[in-house]
Amino acid sequence: MIAPSNSSASFRTMRRIDCHVHLVGDGSSGSDCFIQLDTLFRRIQARVVLLEAGVAPKLLGRGLDVAYAETIRKQIVESSLDAAVLLAQDLPHDDFGKPLPKKAGFYASNEYLFQVVAESPDVFIPAISIHPGRPDAMDELEKCIELGARVLKLLPNCLNVDCSAEKYRPFWERVAEAGIVFLSHTGGEHTLPVLRAEFADPRNLTLPLECGVTVIAAHCAGRSGVRDPDYTDDLITMFDEYPRLFGDNSAFSSLNRARTAKRILRANVMDRIIHGSDFPVPILGIGPFGVGLISRADYAAGRKIRNPFERDCLLKKAMGFDAATFTRMDEILDMAQNESTGCVRRKDSI
Image 1 (spheres, rainbow, N blue to C red):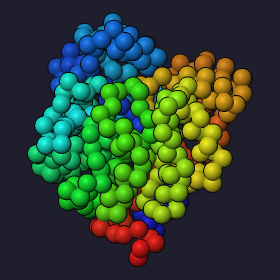
Image 2: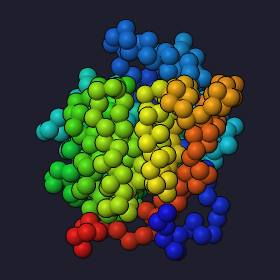
Image 3: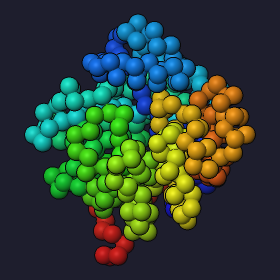
């Protein structure tokens, strides 16, 4: 594990952190959030997800914002975790910076994120979401830095973000300078509308890495659907090239991403893996059981745990993810804040 020698990691107990928890709301409690419920499939999907998350589906349109935030706060406090990175979600934008709200599966603003975090600052770590092609992207980034942003979250394939476009260099340089960690979706996606499937390739993260940004490739770049390209081997190769690159094991307890978990566990990359749930994506355990990663007894034990965050922790341990996986997010938050940053080239080009 790469960590700065002067990091506060040397002087305190590392927190167990879930690095991948989505903030969700529908605006019914006064937030600016929304969820697209324009088709029968999306309405059914929303209800199933909320039910598994421990939130009553009847609250859709009837105070979901407050109920969701309070539910996840309580679940994290009652779990063996110490904190969670809470993710805002920006709108997709076209190539000219125009927002595309009708192309969004859901939306949760940075402003609302900071409101929720302010109510439970010991539980939630703010992860902002800013499309770098927005006309106000740099202004929004500066505002969020002032408010204490620690992480930036994007789904490049769903938001139409070419992360390695040269025009975004100043944005990534500022992210690096501020010590903000970049959590980027990689690999297939079938929960949200996809605008540019090719932007799920982890090689799309080259420019942020070369600008000194600490990057986490969510889902370790594996498949979601059967026909998705699988970029996991590319990510593993990139680990050797970029010391600031990590991957998270979010949604590895689900049916469709357990295949990636099996490959990651077989590779010698455990020191690059960070614990994440992808909550409120259902944490079921049937996927890891189906591919032989956990026993029937482990699967049954998981189903007895009502708290989805604790269930995910149990399943990840049963799969073989080590204790350091759970505290690594705290380490790299320290690393990003304490190490010097700036534009750098790949190791093999220095």
